[in-house]
Length: 269
Ligand SMILES: Nc1ncnc2c1ncn2[C@@H]1O[C@H](COP(=O)(O)OP(=O)(O)OP(=O)(O)O)[C@@H](O)[C@H]1O
Image 1 (cartoon, rainbow, N blue to C red):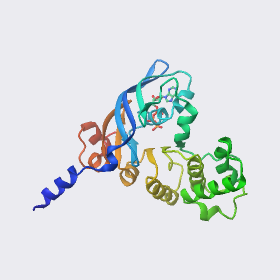
Image 2 (cartoon, helix red, strand yellow; image 1 turned 180 degrees about the vertical axis):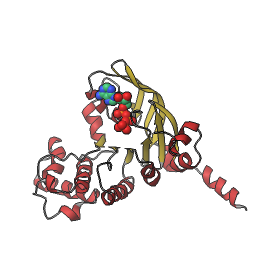
Image 3 (cartoon, protein in one colour; image 1 turned 180 degrees about the horizontal axis):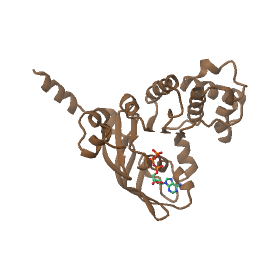
Image 4 (cartoon, rainbow, N blue to C red; image 1 turned 90 degrees about the horizontal axis):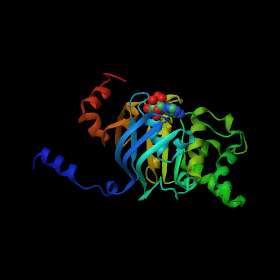
């Protein structure tokens, strides 16, 4: 048996994880007023994998990400057409409870944005809003979430201190813990390491890898090395269109579209 044969056989092996999609997006268009920002996006995002969204500034990465939990609708002029199915149901269905959607589809932003509260209260905030009041239950959630975000050991002796006293990298992991506390299925991350130093970036990247065991992660990044390091799938957006979406290794080593090749080889962007 030659090597080529072995590789080909492995490539066609079905991956059971890929059989389930967390999002199925069909014919998605989005406008800010009269300006169209997304054009006919069609893609299926797999469950329990890390999907990276890359592309030059202004190509619609953040807009796309914020559409997945309808945060984009905070801009009053936004209009959409097409469908996004989250686990089989259309998120644009008028009967869909948007708060419930955002509980399942959490979000972490570019700049760490802890509340001006204690470390403990930052994490307990969401669960309290969801009606969890008992100290023992909250203690458990706080510990589990901070452990899940790989920051428990650093903060366990200072839970009552203000979160602003943490470093930027710690604040970002705290914000990830805050997101975990409401038990989402999906975590949307909008350039979560762009405000961090290289060591904090590495910690967040390691954390993202660990989280994919239990969550589907969609991460917007400007940094192509980061997409190549952390993600299973990569989507390349350009001028509001999805140009190419494939396994990260394929996209970076053997892109199908000339525009993807030009972008990943640094010819523009
Ligand atoms: N609130 C808004 N109102 C009007 N237009 C907007 C708004 N937000 C984004 N846009 C426009 O939508 C397009 C896509 O922007 P978006 O922020 O999604 O791109 P991006 O790829 O995330 O960019 P970057 O990498 O610079 O963050 C741009 O033309 C932008 O000007």
